[in-house]
Amino acid sequence: MATELTPTERLIRDFLLQEILYHRQLADLGPKDMLLKDKLLDSIGVLQTVTFCEGAFDISIPETELRPDHFETIRTIAQLVERHLSQKRVTQ
Image 1 (cartoon, rainbow, N blue to C red):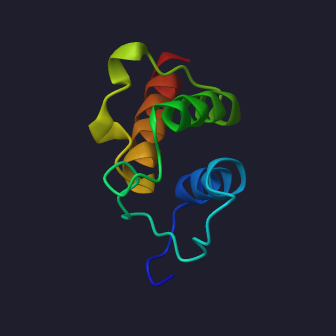
Image 2 (image 1 turned 135 degrees about the vertical axis):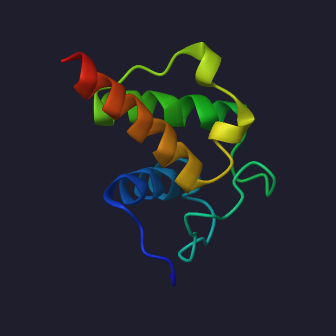
């Protein structure tokens, strides 16, 4: 994989490969690969990813944030997580 992953992206990517995309050969899945457009992630997969991110990063993602543009790529999911982590730090 040519593009380096952030720690957040790596954790999300590992989750997707092990829990959702385990039946596919996607060792080269990168942070900008289109998950929804390429039908790698469906609505159930999005909900599983949200549940994982909320638990792994100790954040809460409100329903208003469950928009397709937040789940297009590993990078956009990581950006969503990072936003919520930043908000959490500010309120603590």
